[in-house]
Image 1 (cartoon, rainbow, N blue to C red):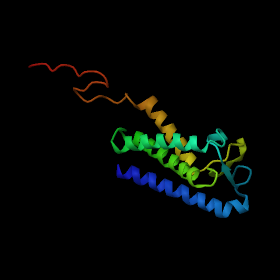
Image 2 (cartoon, one colour):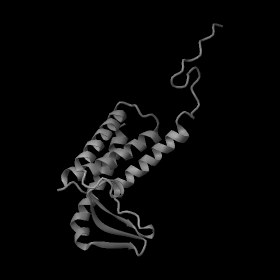
Image 3 (tube, rainbow, N blue to C red):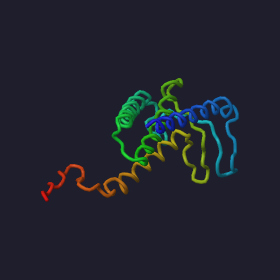
Image 4 (spheres, rainbow, N blue to C red):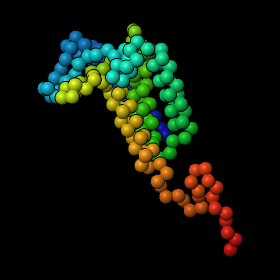
Length: 170
């Protein structure tokens, strides 16, 4: 459990450090090309959620994100999530969600700092926290669709919700 919390803390710290850099360095520069016409860094203040939806709904976004993160953290700490893939996905969602929650809570007006721009498809500007949430959600969906319930059961155990077979007397 400690390693998952450490990973979440490191990702959160990285997210906040990069966002601090973006405010100090990128905001005045406006844009920095990494790979011309492909990948660049643009300072952007997002007052909504993903793709700019729910613009200006700071308190709703704080409340919903806070509740979801509290439930996920409690589940992680109480051992409700089994297996490294499931725990890693929850850890990524926690780190990213908390990174954006901190932005929304502490920046005037409740904006999230975004800075990564993928130009070929004119994708919305995003940040490390967004990457964590998206990758974590993808891994969680993969786990639910393809892993959960597919593991061989230990001898004498039954699938969730079923009683184990009665023991035979020899």
